Length: 248
Image (cartoon, rainbow, N blue to C red; front, side, top):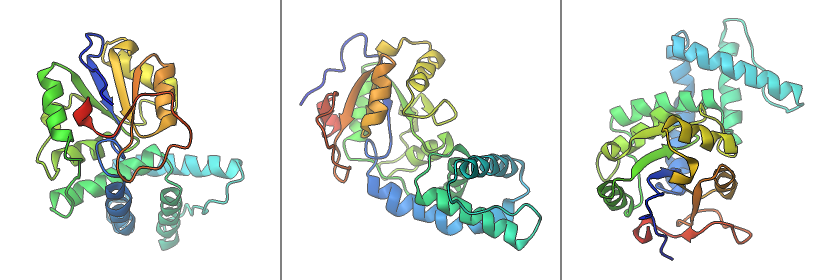
């Protein structure tokens, strides 16, 4: 199927990462295990850093909300001790196991990944059709933005260190859950406001139907990405479907 992005109204392309620009396996089999294995050492070393303290305070608030809802999440120790570190690591692992779209969790993961990219231990993966699509869209004067549950830092790192080279010069903005959660229509309205565009000027491409539903409710055009390795879509979606960017 070919989807026309050459309409004057389609001046902004907003992209999800996982399952859209990047194979799901890279996220779940490379990035997540990398952060999981290193989170204890990272927190032990940088516990007192201001940005880490901010994340930890937010994680404690999340844990309190979990407890209030009766979720059996690991308890957090507050006093300085080995148990305090171990309990926080256990809670972070618990969040990772549930793929929680937690802003402080994603911030911690992003800084761990930064160390991996800078050390050459990580190299971002994108589908082969992504670099030529980025170049084509920019020649057509389309704005390209990323909206992912991963932190803006993690997004920039992935696109700066891909197997196809640095792709960040194609991307004008990065949005994460600090703008709002991806299944909420208001998040997409805020993105449009930030860019001083009408929602109708934007096309959002994702592998997640719930996210596309939210973007559509906000007034954006939407496209469902059915990439290799993506989860099957159980019902016919109310969105145009593509299997790659060559058709866009």
